[in-house]
Length: 475
Image 1 (cartoon, rainbow, N blue to C red):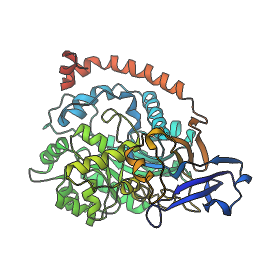
Image 2: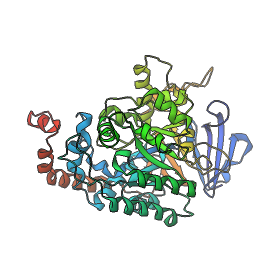
Image 3: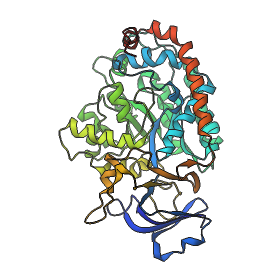
């Protein structure tokens, strides 16, 4: 074996319940899980690297099903404003000052944060995603689903009223579509990189191009990952383009764009009937609870979608709204907010929350044959969680496992002490093996300082409520 973790408690996330195996050993060889089971049946001492897993949970790494990591260096720039202002007036004035190098630096910061709290797979959704894959994910050995943002909208929208329809640039959309298609060839055979298409949203792309993307998905047996019904701003655009009685879901259905190739992100601006329609058409759903509660003041309908039989998983979206890329926070947020929303303390229990960022996440992203569960022959994307922490004490095994709820309701993310991706040790004993975290933090601080200064005039002219809060000395 290359690596063994012995005397640990495995959460395999498969089989009965969560597949808990106490007093277990897991062996890794050539990037794959080679053995898992009771410790006494394998000689763990022959491995090249041996990890004592006592008082630890060993489980699949978390899956972040939707992230825009590049704008992480704008953390704290856009929050506590009305939803209708967030995109154009709050974050927009800063985004247009980002360079390619800034986005790479921001991605490093976001991925660094995610991995340190246990995430091993990121569904990265951005323009020129190839840059982030080649500069961040692949050099660091991090698993990524590369999704090229495809839209036809002019970049500067800060001065538009909510009812002003976006002007479309057909050439911009076609160029992004070509970049997305090229990703399949560029990363063909790469064990760490998967690819899917990324039309941004129905209000930002023509139906003609969206249908071309869907056809390409069918031909490649891929998926298209799209923001769907994400709030009042989108609703106004859809009504302006298609009619006052239209919604995103209605338009997609009428043009046969709902099928198993679609992953619908957010969908909080949908009716119960529309969600049922999405589920009946095998559409996957991604909820981003911290982001959407902050930006929209809404709880993503993950629980309702699951109750209808739909596949759902979680993502962090972008840092300027919710603040971070910690999947542990997403687990707790979706569970607690849903309980409050529907006044049901049984909603999204701990075990289902853990499934949302593991086995369900892998299924949603089409990676179920590679990751999401611990099984012999699958890719070794594994984390260990130290239970000997004040917030995770006591550690109980009989008559039941108290660490299952504690992982969701008591964990912070800094209890993750080992992270393995594709059989390679990324973090060992809380320390990154090959990543200089200090230099990344220093670089991001310098870049962000410049961006905020350069964007000041545009930010003031955009005149979001944050500007007034600043004048009052509140931020």
